Image (cartoon, rainbow, N blue to C red; front, top):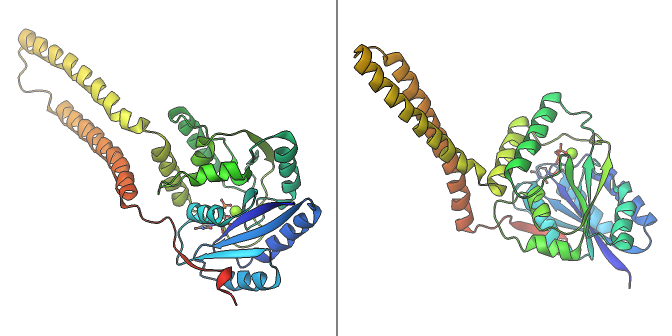
Length: 313
Ligand code: UDP
Ligand code: MG
């Protein structure tokens, strides 16, 4: 029996890119005669013609399936829906904009089938076509998160990867609401082979990531995979206690020796500012974790499906 390979593609306003993507993936599928393919497109609440395009593809190609959300739930949700919907013995996650070249797929497949890897991930070694300031913050993020989290996150790793069914099931067994895939992939373990390639710019349409979205995504990654920020206030608090203890001694001795009762209020004002700043910051950090806990306890679904290709007649 031929094995089945599921290609999961998350699409948000990708009407311009999907036709190119479909051509490419069909070409790759033709080359890989040893497996059957299914193409699962997840329409993440697009506001353009993405859904219409997917419907017409599904009508003419039986390998094309789609899952369409009731609104935009974000890429994490789209990837999870695709993984849950997939039936393949192997599953790959791809972007619709051809930044994840389907041409790498035969090589990835080879590593899994012939060399015994459970997963082949891709990482880009260049960040060509990206604003330098963004690259700088991205590098910083990976440095920080790898210091404060037990789970290893690879710099430049993309979501583009091919996995065995066993690994996909492991990922789906993680039921958390705040999903941070880069962390989940490495949390489940398994043998991962990394392929490196040069960054490719998107074929059509626009990126959905603004600087702020990326920053918030980074904070999410940190709070989802590390509790070290909670330690910050403990450490700073201890440090401040120590400093103030020394200061008390110094001031008492100074007053006893020189008798200087009124001076010193500017320094006092500074200290109050500093300490209350640190307190607010610590409460903020605490609040981040509380907010996550709050969302987890609600047990809301990660996504809601409105229709799939099974609803076509
Ligand atoms: N995407 C999605 N939901 C969103 C935002 C993006 O499914 O809310 C998809 C998008 O259609 C694309 C992939 O995620 O296939 C990556 O998005 P994009 O190319 O905008 O990100 P970049 O490659 O610039 O990081
Ligand atoms: Mg892209």
